[in-house]
Image (cartoon, rainbow, N blue to C red; front, side):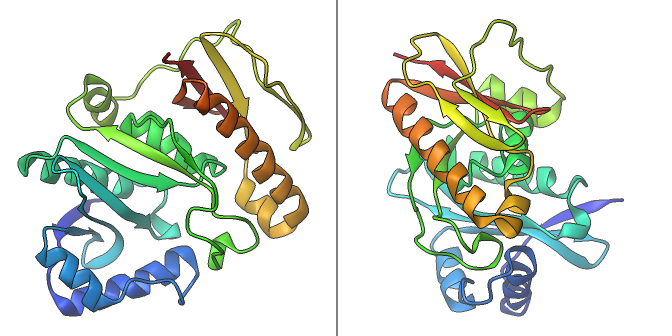
Length: 259
């Protein structure tokens, strides 16, 4: 499969982006109006599409912020048929090159910290970190997000860092975790306990293997996970920890203390 990335300015193609938003996130009431998107592009925003031959299968959209060297990446999405392909990574590579060519040093965005596939991609493939957690960031949402507060982690991608460069172009070894304590106890995908008294350089926090599936099948358990993770991140991020890695089997965040 050969994916091509193209920058988009054509209003007719932008109409396709709206359809793509609905296909990816399942909420026709929460799409960006084409006119609004065009206005943001005229003011220095980026819209690029991922094409499989002539078919639009994904996109990335971002815009300037109040900080001259920071770009906000508002949406990156790929159709389910093309998840696991190079499409998402190529979109982010394109975004990185585009931003660097315009003087940006940093790209930021939000993501749901309970969705392990996204977390793995953000940390392992891109090299982001986060030290900010925003409860109910967007208020009530629909589509794939129906039924839970829209808590989000605030990802920071340092474009010129060696960490980002190495990860976006080469596979990285898994971190050594022997002896690193885990702050929570999980049994059969249920959060059972949380230790808030750890004073260690590094610690782990486990999340479900597929929280999206839990949200669809067992909303009560999904909300328990939201409350559990919110309490954890609020506590440890406020004490100087930063999320620096995400490992699989089981899904766990690795946090390091900065101060």
